[in-house]
Image (cartoon, rainbow, N blue to C red; front, side):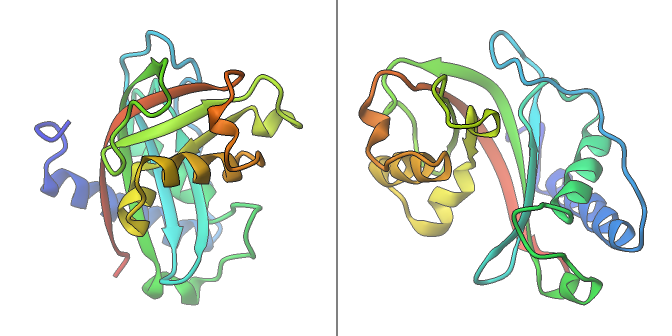
Length: 191
């Protein structure tokens, strides 16, 4: 991934995302590109765009894998992040103060031991067949979270469980299925 996604390429993707954010807040609409939620045997990359202030997340969207048109995927994820229903409506005057995170996911690998990952290098997905609602059946936690908060393996597993609306120690149960992905990311101010 590092060879394919150099610092210059990641900066280029950041500019695409910032442009999409500005256009989105002016009313533009970006269509979803081809992607997939099938983590098994999918060799195509995934992408996520996350927006935050110094204190709070402001929006995020991820396409796990199967992305064929990376530029369109970044635009779409940025567009959807500005409209993330988990957060208050975003305004144009926030753009200059935002941090943007672009993550590129390699293929996802099912792991038998949920501790078999490297915080800050691997992103994790947990599938929960007993989720309380369909939108919680799959939860992603990006590797950048470990870097931002200096999480170790246990901290990261507890955080993904809380995000999935589980007890923070539910990662110890055998009913959850974990996947990891090598992830390269860029975090920078939008301006």
